[in-house]
Image (cartoon, rainbow, N blue to C red):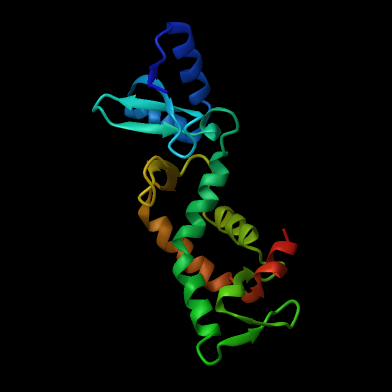
Length: 193
């Protein structure tokens, strides 16, 4: 299968309009898409993937979610908030297993080792409730204080971050103060979702 260029002006306008309705699509449009292509999917040669080509010649895959069911800005923002407190989560995990290779799951009491363990926020102070409390305290609008950036972790992915870097440190401090963490087995953690 060869690369195909979307040449029909109406088809291209349609695809760009759909792309404009997603967070990552907006960022890609702002970067300057010069054309959209379809190429064989790298993971499945019988499938095709949309690709954006930018003015600088760079190309980036546009996943299914970019077009059909894009994540909301809130989903991106929650992902950012989780990423910036990951050091706190990992520190808690290390401290929990520092003196014993197996510890009891806080929910079931079953002994678990590091590979079977997840870190969870104790209810009622779930991660989401802590994030919402922070947003209220800081008068954050989920859409206004964020910018969409290419992900530093994975080419072709997008993430959000605070426009004001000092908010990131305030969020870390707020989470450190309000989070009550526990170790759960992966199975127990999945049962809560």
